[in-house]
Length: 547
Image 1 (cartoon, rainbow, N blue to C red):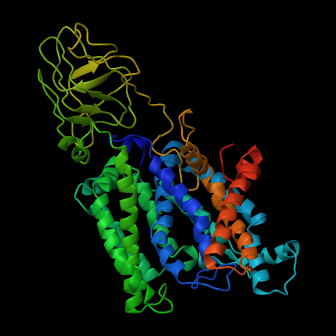
Image 2 (image 1 turned 180 degrees about the vertical axis):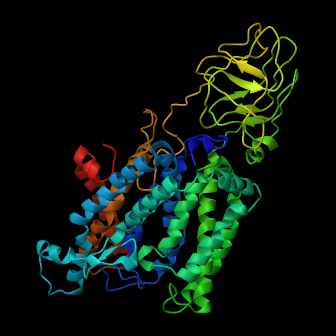
């Protein structure tokens, strides 16, 4: 699949909601992991003497969608990155952005939570951190736990399991794209299928089956690693065609209703499924996991689809977006006549309104002629028949096509629309196609798709926006955190555990202790990013940021 396969652009390119979801999840992890200190059902590194089951119920509302959404968004960004860089460039970029921070964390501060777990469990343990490190790094192969291929009595990747999985999925994807034939035909059939309401929810059956029969993994936020792989691959496919995005917007309400209803049933069923609901193969446990997996996909689609509705261009009709070019009103007119509706061809040109050509014919556009993607050739846009007259329709850039107007989006014929400049002889109000780049622009050399400023869930660096003096402090804080998401993710858990190690010794109610863990942990994590990561090129590189 290439950028040429991209369907017509019907919405604004930038998707700020993806940055917002990623930032919300990463910052929310400070609150989530702090709550595990007081959770009666989780074996966190440091535990408060008094625990509660309320945190399990509250956390369930986030667990069902948060990490799956990050993997889906990572898949979105991977498609754009793969299209620009190719499999080789994508692999190098993933190793730099994900592999380097993972290795640096393992070699420096990732052992801290494990060391503090031992100290919290055994007051008589007085071994220094330096003395503990050789034990942590004593590892052996463990291929049965792929992709966590090394293990040990103390070694673990901790909260960076997400980075391990995402890096592995990315490398496997690069190999698949490199060696598999083009799958544009399959993609087109899938994109056509989502024109029917509710089809975009069908992957919920797959996530449900994985959770039911493979099981769920508590160490990975309640989901199976293979369910995360499915979310990642679905994100990669969904980014390949605009019609998937349109379907998610259209079915957002349906997804919210179905997902909410199923999740409301899931909670009681899962909580009463016995001592080991994540892996037990009793009918009760299997049904509970199946419901959980089904609800998760629906809720993720609902969140992304409903938030994306803000990005729809008001002048375009959503119902027409799902139609293929042959179905959307494209007409080849021999001789004099008109072209109405919309014509989609890989490119990046849009012409709307009507264009009057003096002479024997006219080209009237009641909709738009959209050319998303890349444009090849030079010379003309061919239209069957001839458009004769004293003037010509000017379109700058180079566009070509042959064949007929059909579902593949090609346009051909014996006549042509070529040249550069306005339609000669057309006065004010008669319509023209200006030749300036400010009106119509073709940029086949463009390397970057702006639809995702950050390429994966762990590459949260939106392009700097123009400085707005009226920008609110809240907006500035949001943009700051969006850029910092990966370093904050890498840094936060050792800090939470270190703070909690001291707080659990207090004689205070759980709410007071919880705030005493959350507030300093969040402040220290942001401070560590600002003063230890953000300000030098080498530390930015070590934490996967652009330098």
